[in-house]
Amino acid sequence: MRIQPLALVAALTTVALPAIAVADAADDAIKARQGYYQMVKHNAGMLFGMAKGDIAYDAEMANTHAGNLSALANLNTGSMWPQGSDKASKPGKTRALPVAWETFPAIMEKQDAFVKASGALAANAGGGLDALRANIGPLGASCKGCHDTYRAKEF
Ligand code: HEC
Image (cartoon, rainbow, N blue to C red):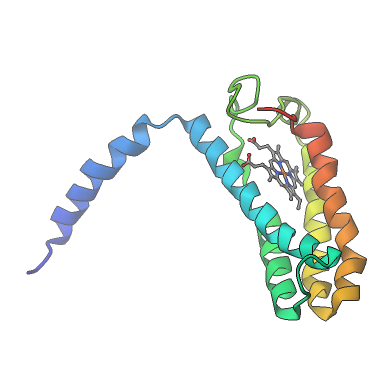
């Protein structure tokens, strides 16, 4: 059977577009950024685990997760932070505090710390457990540094 390209396009538009149109843009962005931070947590968690000795050090694994983390830190996530997606506008759904929008671009300093810390790990974490440990401190500090100011404890 030959698929008619135009028919396929028509089928995709009728099925997919209304589904996107009805979704709340702020809710969608909140889900995206929480998913993003779950990926950050997964990759950082592997590195914290190896540094603590809870997970056996493996150079290739350390390199992979540090590289992933650095790639995540360097993503442009601007569209995941629309106006109206803060905790005051969406209580119960997000922990992102309004101050992130009110004082923007101050939060970018915290993001820069995350970019630098993950970059140093990407360059060094595969070079042995001591090299991983020597570079892990600033990573943990970069998470905490942002959360202390911009993330609420509760949803
Ligand atoms: C530039 C600021 C910033 C940095 C850096 C940052 N976070 Fe976050 N993080 C946030 C904010 C804001 C939220 C709340 C997002 C929401 O609920 O909409 C969050 C949420 C999270 C969540 C919860 C996601 C969910 O499912 O609700 C985890 C886990 C997390 N961060 C882990 C980390 C780790 C680990 C690091 C460091 C490796 C890190 N974050 C670095 C700002 C940051």
